[in-house]
Image (cartoon, rainbow over all chains, first blue to last red; front, side, top):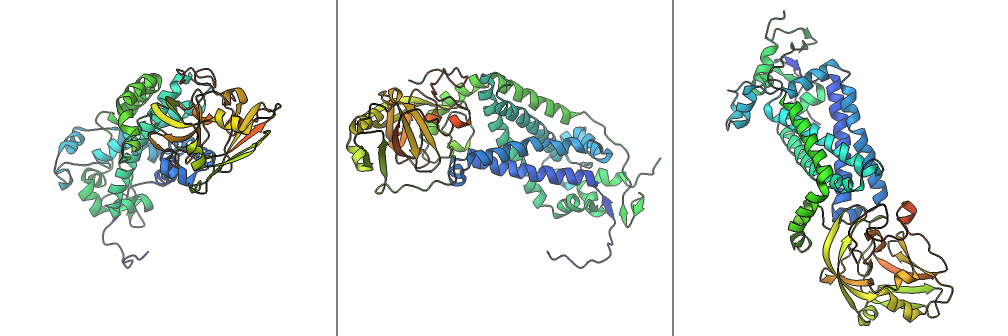
Length: 211
Length: 252
């Protein structure tokens, strides 16, 4: 990778993501990727016939799936992670306006640490992951639930997997379009100027006097 | 200049706790969980409705796009080994061996010249999906057994696949049923490679795993030799509706 010469930053950097958040994001990302790739091989006919080894692919998929929520739960031990979860959870009236607005990126609607799209993506992903975990468990542990549920679990697992796939594609799409946001998740900091244009209300929190 | 605490040029001061507004995220998560739970419990009915609506489109969709949607009741393709090489139709041979008076080796043309049986039956997978009204055509397995003449001590048939791993078994009595086919055609065309072509087994009254794909060998044996999936816990006599702890409607 070539990077522009490391001139001393004229612009201050704001700390955006703590180490626990970045680690959880990274580990979940890798597990999610493995789950998606193995799911594709299990689900798509042409891929399945190409890859084969159904037992092995299935085992990898199942165990990565069960492992996926672990870092999310472990993260709860860290205050900075919990603080970000709280921010993702809360929707203000500005968020609803932001979602409806056609000019949401022009900065006129104050955006906190996360914009409403990120909040929505976060909660939709979390809910879908939970459903995938539950339905996957029903599919796996056939003794736990009536057999009729297994058909329903398969159906839910399929549909929610499709939804999660689309959410991940959208997430990666927006991330790739914003190298500074991407850098923020990699290194933990973002330029103050970027923060002021993309997350003005959050950037302003840094200027408030501490009480 | 930001007024936060500074450390190595980075403003690290954790902004004070700002959350205000409604906990919408939590509601979305719980709502999805509820939806998922409802779907798991009522899914059978939901799936039946969906697939009754869409199966005719999906199984015959020439673009293949509909099959990308997880709509439940369409064929899903399972392969237990690595990629299975396609069999060259001209080179294909089906061998009949074991406890027989007349071991045989049949080419695709031989099989096509034999008496054919047409069936329209549902295909039910033990994992829950069911494809309604699939047209099948092929040689009754019983016909091939008659040609070979089982020895008196033969009681079972062992079926092998040219994928090198997949095996299945039937008792001689099961194998002689007239709804057990060495299938050459399904869905109004030759059996495609993904479906286990050029030649696969179709055991109409049993779960899909009994319908071995990429059939290449029929061997008569003294006893039933449990097949690939049976070694992994599935019932040897895989009757739809009365095995594997399931209660689906019978398919034949």
